Image (cartoon, rainbow, N blue to C red; front, side, top):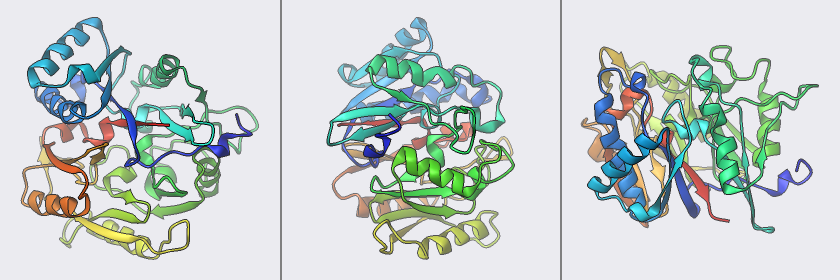
Length: 354
């Protein structure tokens, strides 16, 4: 496969999807004192998506499968569009632990990348999450590629999460130095900027690398891109903006905007930049959580946008509706879900149509 991997690419999120992969919540430790509220949020997200397209839903046990089915039915989900899989997970966040799908339009073939997952080099319980992709590959009967460290003499599987990069499907990719180049929560020991660029060039067929600096305060992933900047078209990027000079995110987010203004797409053209205001700081149990409107998800017919019951919600929804004129923009209250340090994009992983 290494000889032909360059014939494949990762489609952009807005390209036609066959399915959305989601995991049913079960880890009470991820939402201390608030877990009972989380299934209700997940049910709403599944309902909005299953109305128009297929959902592949991972559940840990037969008992949880039955319970999820009952709850989804009561919520009004289109059960005929939901396929249940008994696959054990440690956490909800399939954007990071789940497969990265690649397609070859000429041969009409689909494969998946199976990166190593180590729970953001922060938590110790990731054994089940690190096995998810083997089981999904077996179910779909598609080839699973194990990305290896290019600078290593022996085979070493690369650690990577889907929320650490964002692509326009045409050769450009968004990344952060904080996440991938820091010694804190280091994913791949000794990896440099050039190593990551060779990696993404080989396995994602990207050639244009846009390195922003830092993510937002409270992000336990240490700088994931999907909280601060996202492609919404081949030439358009939405980026987080903070105008309160006393806010801890102010300086780093302004620096990111400056970097982006000096960046070009894969064809050497400037990007159209849409600034998305940050929500007012949100604290749960005296902890600032990484609330961001950039953790949205684009499906075939909708755009699910996290809101947090703060004054910025309405303005942000207007911005999204002005841009996404051919999709229905749906606000999803994530003021409880964010206590697990993630929102809608973190818990979804799209599977493209060939």
